[in-house]
Image 1 (cartoon, one colour):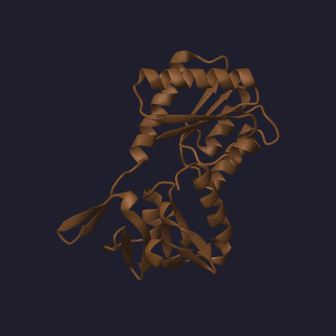
Image 2 (cartoon, one colour):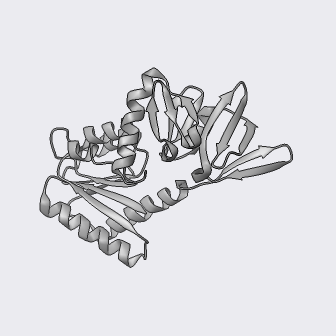
Image 3 (cartoon, helix red, strand yellow):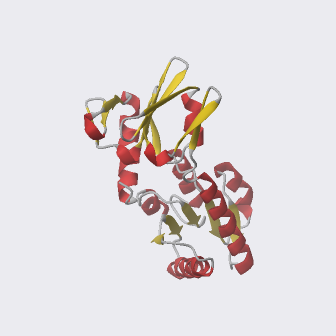
Length: 236
């Protein structure tokens, strides 16, 4: 399911964007999707996790640019599309890696092209299998089967649902860059799939089957926030 968020403090504009987006999804034959609307940046920041965000700039406070900065700091890596009457901040949009900058009143074709690019980018990232080379062969680990990964020395150990472990040489930072937003770096030596987290207690992340891995004291608050966003998004 693809989750869209629209953030605009003008109700009629938010409604228009939702209608245009709904029509686009119907025309392109997309599967199940959700569209949530927010009237402020603060509401969006507390609204859960999303795959694609359409965001006005002229709001406040925080305005759209500051909201985008905060979203990126929270770990949002998905397509971000600005929809605004303001032409001047277009270059500021590069700072937050915006996918596109659309000026109101909307041009229908430009809007459609922006969504085409957003979904193409999203589908290219989502669910990509992790290919692990082992000697002359390899193993493929679907991300939904990866519970957590730990690094020991120069080796990575990928713990799969069901108890299997795949090991290989590599760096945890490289794996972190390859996976999507469901994964969280809870410790310098551990990367965990939030979909498998069952709680956090006494410096440990609790996993199914009674397993536990450490969480850095400095990252406990971020982990809690990431879990809350995940739960609000209906993923856990």
